[in-house]
Image 1: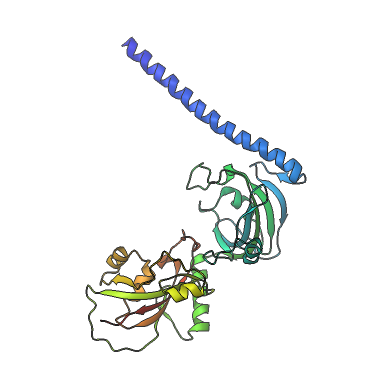
Image 2: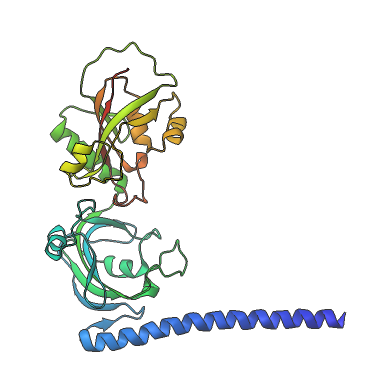
Length: 324
């Protein structure tokens, strides 16, 4: 019995030792970053303010418009740089072109950041919350602040990054903002068009009388996907891809073979397409051409899917090829 207790005690001591070593290793990794960053700031930005979190605030202009509060969303223009000042990412199309890093397949324009919901880096939220529209900030985000509530304390960036951000718009109720944005788009481009259901617009662009049943049919579908500002993010039409600079020679650019089903969930699963796309095709038949627009709850939701940001309404032009 005594030997057993001694063995348990030894294991407990070993576990504590291992935990302490791991904790010490984590602390030493951060302390190394802190020493490097402190030396860098003293040389490059001697007037910068180091906040208790470790974030380095180089410059901030509050702005004069609407204030961004916690649990609200903001559209931001931003540029990130390495400590050597090289641009790593930017929403500024002109800057990207000037530096020779512009890609048609990248989206250039403000990006939405949601605060208070564990989806934005803690360091970014620290600066963003309290800014007003028109406000700008320049700061250094150390890697230990590139964490969200969803990834625990795991650093998503391995190095400190310089951020330059500008708040362009504050959104207090995302669902209402999406609905209003789509309503305004429809009023301009398709006057009189109303939703078929909440956040879902559909309009057939040709007039064909149908007699064919689509039960278990496979449709050949051509499509063009856009954001509401007109930016084309996807298509299976080669000439369109070339026109908008997103052509990829490794893509086949052939009609999508879409398995029609009366059950919407089965349709989604069988075709691996977003729900709004499937909802539109449920309204179509052979030879039909249509416009559809739908909110993010039928698209990529709050996560987004690069290069599409979170809470983005989507537009598709769809064409079902005639029955052979």
